[in-house]
Image (cartoon, rainbow, N blue to C red):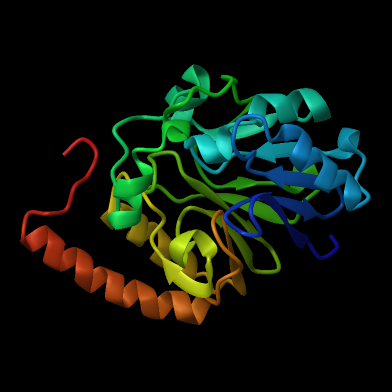
Length: 248
């Protein structure tokens, strides 16, 4: 199968919120942006020479509204089935994220007050229900969906056979991508320790680049260095009883 090309689809700003178009034997869209952004995503997909009816699958990386907000709309516009992990079915079926948001730092605490993050998106039912590692070969792509829980229970990433990791909110660019190439936590994590475990598992597979939901592509070696520091930070927070985790 031919090389998979990873094309960023900006939904907000240049890199603040990204969806992705993966081009292989057939095209696959990863993530669906905020509510009402389906046509904007589709316009960028068609600008890359893709007929919407050729899209084979829409993969949603997790149950936050800036990633699944237009999934139902994109499904109608393309006819492509939507894939999502079973552990995030609640948000997908209700159109509402699990609350409260659990901030990772000052930006998260600020953003948690943004009414748009508490809005209701149009619900959808994933036609492709992810439970474990899932090949995308049948959808025309040399890639795998990889469960990467922690940011949410049902977070997933897409790893191409060429080594590109489309990582959702497994890691982010600093200040929602405003600082180019600098790894950081996204504003929220349901379970920071589990998320770091998932990140390290993906890094152990030696990806060539990490394509994130917020920011420009990240260099794996730089992310590894950041992950070591993050581990030490989480150990200190846990020891001090200051590590907040959903359900604990």
